[in-house]
Structures are given as structure tokens and as C-alpha cells.
Length: 433
Image (cartoon, rainbow, N blue to C red; front, side, top):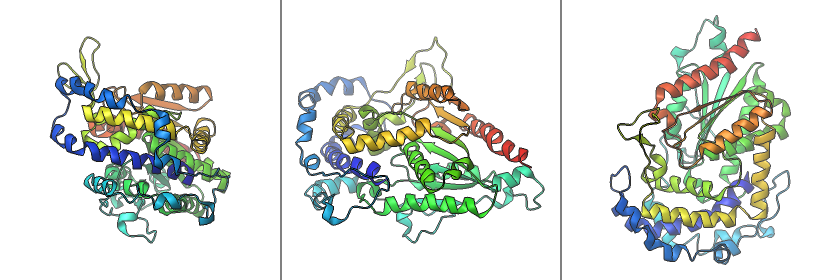
């Protein structure tokens, strides 16, 4: 886990934060409250060509944050390197990490705001702002206290693990957790706060939290026969986190894989280290609602869930500053994703997700309008899973933006979840009685 997040994201965030700082003044003037970008914004993009075209992989490789990184090849046990290994001490005390520009831009972007505590949370002996996962109990009125209902019993013995997208906070997953708990399920919401990722250290809090989550789930499953898990992942970040959890399950106790009854994949995957996809994801995480990734597509008449073929589709365009940021991030990822240790680690996790998933049903929720995860990539992976003999379902929301399908069409979204849970969780449990 340390290899996947620490090695990859420390140099990325250093470069990106400087870019954000340099364009923050111009960005605030251009993005007051508009939903889409005007044609005049797009026409001025040529002014960036002169300096963006000068960025090359060779030049990026000469930057201090790249040349200072020394990454050992991780072994299967992922030990925590000591200070004698020279792993990251120089980076942690570098001028980049302590730069006022980096720190000021980071605070201006409000990346260190702590999420409000949820109604129920798992106590992991850390302050509320540092809690990375919370346990949400089923609502009392959703539980059959008489024990006469097989469905109620099955729900109460099932935990839905919600794995958030890059930049997601606990408050963003709250609506999903509430939907599950209102129907009698336990729910766990797991996020990687941006502040935690930016300050990541091997063997640090992020690594400790995911280990705690895996061990907590394993202990809960072992308490009583018949307990099960359902995973609900968001974007590639949540999906890759799911892959690391599966890896840990297989090392800890391979029988845990059989306790996974289903996996719901929202707005993912792209099963390859694609610089453009990673750049889009991080750009959306930095710019949040001002990113074009948060805008869906509409018809020429009005926004509709299903667009008629005869109607003109209106797609929002990125502003000049976002276009520049995307180009810079893509150049950075061309370097970072091709570092041998990073590439090897990603391929290991992607291998688990492609060929060693548990034998349980999968539901893919995606959209043709997603500006981060191309629909074609999702559909290609679905076909691969079907050829491998997996039970796969899918729903294309057509016009909704990245990880925003629930908010845009809650009726369709919840109907998909309800049908999937009834078929893969509740029916299986009824058959066991």
C-alpha cells in the first residue's frame, strides 16, 4: 500500500500544487459561478501553447522532486524502510515540501478541512480530523427485532464497504451510507483525505488505517458464521483500494474472499496506468466543482436522462486554466507512471482486479458523459470479466458526470442497487437456510 500511494503521489502533488498556485489568481476570476465555459475562453487557449509545448519528459526528469526520489523495490511483505535506507528523508525535508508557495496554495485550496464526525464511527484512537474510516450502524427502525425475517437477518450480517474517490471526504459518502443503513445494512465509509495523501509517509497513518480496516473486517467476519461483505467503490482510487484490500485478504486468509457477496463499481475502471486518466482524476480533485469533470451533457432542448439521437448534445468545455493544468499533469504522469517500482506495483494490483477477484456478482455504474473515466474503458473491462465467466451487470447513465450518478438520478441509481442486493446478497442468504 505504501508503494502504491506514497511513491506515486508525493512527487505528483509537489508539482501540481505549484501549478495550482501559479494559476490560482487567474482561475478565481474566470470561474465565479458559470456552469460551462464560453467560446472566448477556449479561443484564448493558444496563449498557453508556447510554454506548454516546451514541457517534455526529459525536462521533467531533471526537476528536483524527481531526481531526489530514491525508491527501493518493495518485497511481498511491504516492510517499512528505516532511515538508513535513504528512502524519503531528503524529500521530507526538501525545499519543495517546506515551500511557502506550496503550503499557501494548499491551504487556499482548503484541502485540510476536517470532515464533521458521522453519527457512528469506529474508534481507531486518532483525532476526528484524522479518522479515515467510519462504521455506520443500521437504523433501529430497519431491524426486525423478532428475528423472524430471513431478509432482515441477512442484512444485519452484511457490511457494505464504501471506498471513496480521490479527494472524497466522509461527508460525501454519508448519503450512500445512510441509504444502506436505512435498509438494515451496516456500512463503512473509507476515504483518503487530500491532506493525508499530501503528507504521506511509508509506515504512516494512511498505511496504518488501511491495515486496521482489513484486520477489523477480518475480525468481524470471524465473530459469527454467515457474516458477509459487499464492496461499493468509487472512481479508480476506490477501485484500486479495493484491489489492495483483496491482496491483503489473500495474504491474511484466502477463505475471506468467499465472504464477499458482491462488488459495485461506480465510475470505474480504467485497468491500465494511463497518464491522461490519472491527470483528469487529479485535476478534478483539485478543482472540485469548478472542473469540467463535474459537468454532464445536456440535449439542445433540456437536460434529460436518455438523449434522443436526433437531439444535439451539448458538451461543456474546460477553461484555459484547466486545460493547462491537465497538460502539465499528463506530462508529470508520463514520468511517474513509468517509474519501474510504480509501474510494477500498479500492474500487481491491476492483476488482482483483472484475474483474481472473488467469485461474486459485479455491478458497474458508469456514464458516457464521464470526463475522467471513458465509458469505452469500462465496457472493455466488463467484456473481459464476462469472458472470464464472471456474473456482470452494468448500467450506463448516459449523461451524468463522474461519481455523480446518484445525485443526478437517485431513482435509477437506487433501483440498480436494490435489485443487485436482492439478487446477490439476500437471495443467497435465503437459500442457505
